[in-house]
Image (cartoon, rainbow, N blue to C red; front, side, top):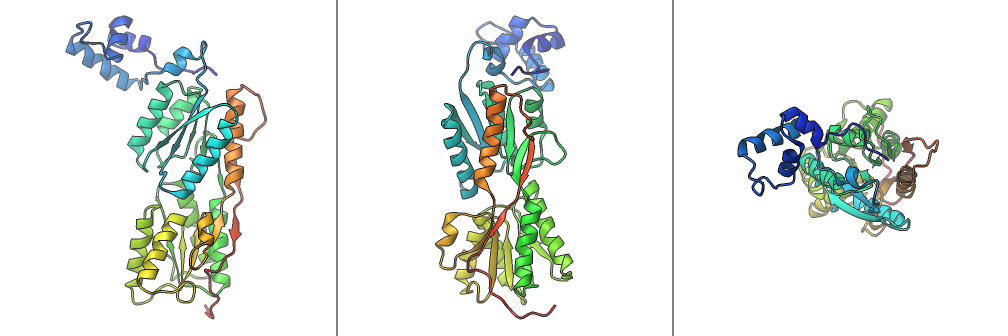
Length: 344
């Protein structure tokens, strides 16, 4: 698949009035070798930045060679959810003869941009990305240039970039309704990264279910990261309040682990004292002292849809595949929710 409308060294030469060979030597780090002046070097570098130039072996080598190398960018390999996605995608694409290089953006947009540019410049044939924030221009630019890519889990609602994700709103509504059906009205939601679409939709679903049940005075959303530390600190703060919630809804399994650690330190029993439900499902939730009820995303299906789409693009197959897919989650019932008598 050919790249479209991509800035090349000819564009930079025209912008600067310098020769193509001079531009090429500067961009390849050979200014000193060819005694190119610092002034010319700065002019070329400024033009390259202005034109969003990315050194790209992909474009120059596509006709003559294939690397069979694909890139996967995740927000954090420390998060078991993202590590599981990486493992499933790696196994699936490796079975089709591709090598997968995995990059961890560490929930940092600048790191994500650097990793993306490095992947493109190294002749990677396609990308799967779990974006770390709300900025999309760097991904949109690569997509518009024709490099096959798809987003998984996190995505951008107002964009044509392909994605596969879960119905996060529906999952959060179901989780909150389950707590309410068991008598809980004082429920705190501990959220993750505020900029991510899944988090925003989960918070929206939580608030919607609370309002639908007529619970307006005790809607409480805290936190700002999908991390164990966030779950731990926010739970510690909740336990310092005079009126503690009867239930906590954590928006990721990592947040849940931090929450459970804080409750244990304060000798708070689950579910006798405080009930818990979490978004995302991992096998370890079954093996905790109190197995945790969760909203399970269909990870197998998500990864299969993402890899199938990418492979169809890599093989130039014309299919009627929907490019933006939302799959339904399900509740995994365990023992972390107590039924209480609470008339509200």
